[in-house]
Length: 362
Length: 99
Image (cartoon, rainbow over all chains, first blue to last red; front, side):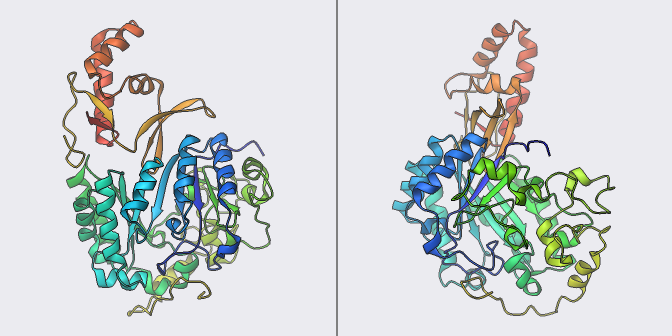
């Protein structure tokens, strides 16, 4: 296999600790304990290696990355290495002093998550009393500090009707970007699918709301819209292609092609404690497993779109078809497409209670 | 003009600057220029890179056009057309603001 292109972006999951318990969390069901987290100097080395490989942007995420007291130190290190730094945060730990420390460390951008616009609903989804009020305060502090802000809203059947109000809130809070992202169904999201999966009418309504807001806010606020691929005919080009653009490093230093890849069985996950990032990117079996198109089964192998959607999502294929190397079942041509149709058909009228994301609850 | 309102048209008298959270950066690995922006980096073609290296928050677009017309010994009207079209697109993307 030829040498892969240099990675563009690194998702640095500094910790799985988080004050929130959102039932669609992208973290794995088995959360990494604090005692095994990478230390400051280990992360600094990783950031240097990433920059020298050609990574342009680092996204500090979690869990809640602000639970790490060394966050400003890592942000400063990223800036010195020439990396564009983005903080992906729930905002509940932001105080004027902690935000100032990040601004002084030359943090480039913040993505702040909201669970809803209605405080009672938002706090119920996050399973944290007072979380929404803290986020509103965090957004005001970020705007006052002048750090560019993206608001992120995860959309599902229990908040989809509020999308127009979410876009208005983003505008009021001075966000330059907003993400309206329907839940993806892996890990915790899959566990809670019946409580989260919207119906077709909700999808159509959110699409209309986003289209109208884009026209109204052109040049002032951009809107990223992620639809739930269960309602699409073709799969999404997950991660821009496996091992093509994106690296994820878990709190304990495992290096993955996507944040859900730990579900893939019978493979060793390389760690930054045992090998260099470049060696892992180029040679580790997990990265070469689904790189390019050689691995593809039919109908992908003879599909005209195989270099557009790269066969879709491997973790979704594993979760729904039981095989990571199957065609993504959301594709209407996939042999296992019935799994997706069944999930939609069997969706209960009343959403069941959330199974919250926390240590030991999977 | 504040960052919260829509972009006014950029003309030769405009002094452009990069919005906070955006910048031009040379990528030594790929040997190309990128515009770094919130949660995306987009490739700056050689012409865009020449223009953006002259955006310093004090120079007018007219002055940028003069410098490029001289550097590339090209007709000023052609350069002006290209530069104004390019900055309009970057203002729309919230990369450039009026200083």
